[in-house]
Image 1 (cartoon, rainbow, N blue to C red):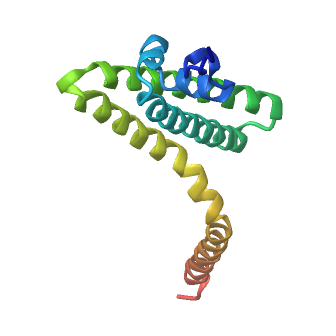
Image 2 (spheres, rainbow, N blue to C red):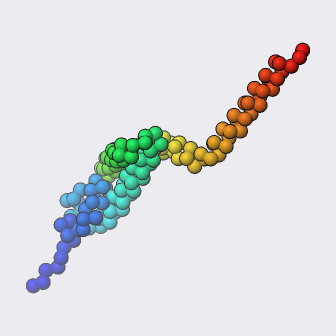
Length: 158
């Protein structure tokens, strides 16, 4: 009698197991419900992408204020892991919240907006650095001209 291979977690590849872990999936549920496996893989991919972007964004942010690359890398990984932990817990809360799923989603969106606003400022400054420096030169020249005019007015014969 030939045995057919079963699709259980023990036969899943390492990437699938990692993505299921990222999605805060219950292994026993996935062992019984074959249809949910792909859904949890997709959720895991979204959490993984969020973690990668958060780590890169925090790394860039800290690189604008700290010159030590090792410290920047450590802080980026630490804060990226903090975002990963928050995201995983919110995903787990969404899957078990029943009818009140909007609360974890609302909190996740609020957190994303706050972090986005906090991280976006250094990116905006980097993108427009040349324009900002050019405007600073023009502002400085305008102030110097105004100061010279006031100085000439004070020193002019009455």
